[in-house]
Image (cartoon, rainbow, N blue to C red; front, side, top):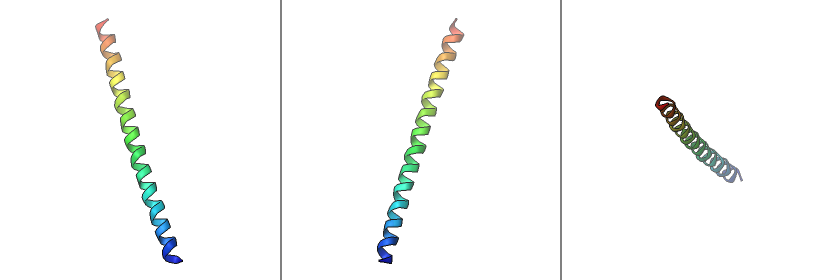
Length: 48
């Protein structure tokens, strides 16, 4: 029974880490998009 519990905890920890990595990747992608939009807006402003 203890071994099963340890395996379940390990699986939850792996899932948690995978979700954390996905969140970090999503945040990085959003930051990239935001920076690109800001650069585009700045470029348009400079062209005025």
